[in-house]
Length: 148
Image 1: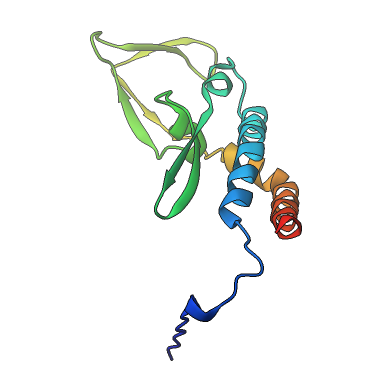
Image 2: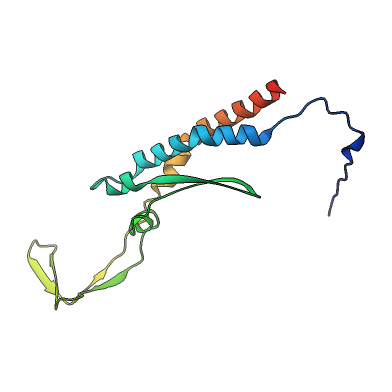
């Protein structure tokens, strides 16, 4: 099934002009820093480096406005997405040195790492504030309607 709609506005007398772009742009400016702060608050805080590294950037293009949140730390995606089981090999030394389960110091040329569970902290952060974001978006669009 398909549908098409053709509209020639040449005979239309404009009686109301609504700028959705302005409403979206205003909303993005308002909530972008708040989303970043929410993600930082949800990030694991062993050392605080991951939390401190989280930032955002806005991009404007033909398809609209996008906001990306992330970190330049090399391990950030491993925390967020987890890792599969993998082997860790000694590099530049003969053996790895670590504390075993019994508390003894162990030396081995490699270990079978069991992997890490994902910690989707950014998703949790956005889901937690999503109702508020949606409400504020509706308010900004409604404000544009009232202005027009």
